[in-house]
Amino acid sequence: MTYRSMPKVELHTHLEGCAPPSFIRGLAKEKSIDISGVFNKDGTYAYRGFDHFLQVYEAACTTLQGPQDFYRLVKAVLQESASHGVVYQETFLSPDFCGGGDLAAWRDYLAAMDAAATEAEAEFGITLKGIVTCIRHFGPDAAKPAAICAAETFGDFITGFGMAGGEMVGRPNDYAYAFDMAREAGMPLTCHAGEWGGPDMVADTIRDLKVQRIGHGVNAIRDPQLVAQIADAGIVLEVCPGSNVFLKATGDWADHPILKLRDAGVKVTVSTDDPPFFGMTMTDEFDMLAATFGWGADDFNALNQIALDGAFCDASTRVKIA
Ligand code: ADE
Ligand code: ZN
Image 1 (cartoon, rainbow, N blue to C red):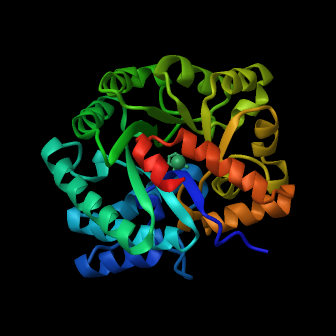
Image 2: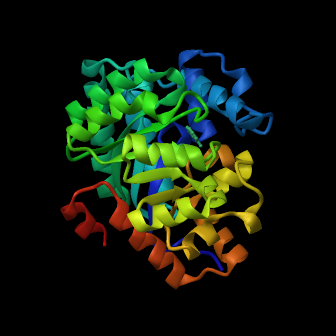
């Protein structure tokens, strides 16, 4: 039994982290860039632990050098996602990797990605929206131009603002200026927290950055009061079980907190994060949840509905997807 053909709504992916290894190898060859440390002998991404994962991720990103590369990336990623039943996907886009935070350059990259997404929608039947993302370990000063890029391009394709990267760098409040700027522009917000940090990091993120969604959030499970607060506030968790198990942010599938979080009334959703880095797809996520917890079509329909309700797109897109 596989849930491959079931329609799926996915809220948490990193565009560069969705790049198939063969795509990055192809770009490296075209441009004669040496990225030999990035791959294992069998062609998969090579890294040891989360910090090294971030280094390898950034090394792979050096092959993505202009709007046309991102156009091709969006097409390749959406074709793959659609083949796993994904009908709506949100992806983190980082001005840091698209022109280094320069607004004019960012607009060029964005135009290329938006065009690719529009074509992919017609060709593969999948809708993509972008969440502009600052990178936490690049520091609070780099978060500000990312927030300016977000606020200036908020609209049909760019639907939200967020933060990814090394979670243990600084405290959430260090990034409040960027989040305030995006919120004042009317943008909905999400932030990675509780993937590596404890419940305190999740609580501070909610209090100081006033986000509607949390990326991962799984370590909230260690504080029942916080879990109740998240449930009461209706904050959506973008849970990525395959990523957590592979990177060892949590224990194995059987011990994954998604079950207890859901049973405590938290709005959980399921995403792949950086699928080729973990050898995962959305089909695998659904199939593993079915095999581990006995979830079936009703559970997955409920997950999809929560994801759709928590999506950052506008009402007309929501109606189109439903
Ligand atoms: N960037 C790409 N994947 C990430 C993850 N799992 N956590 C934080 N930042 C990321
Ligand atoms: Zn992530």
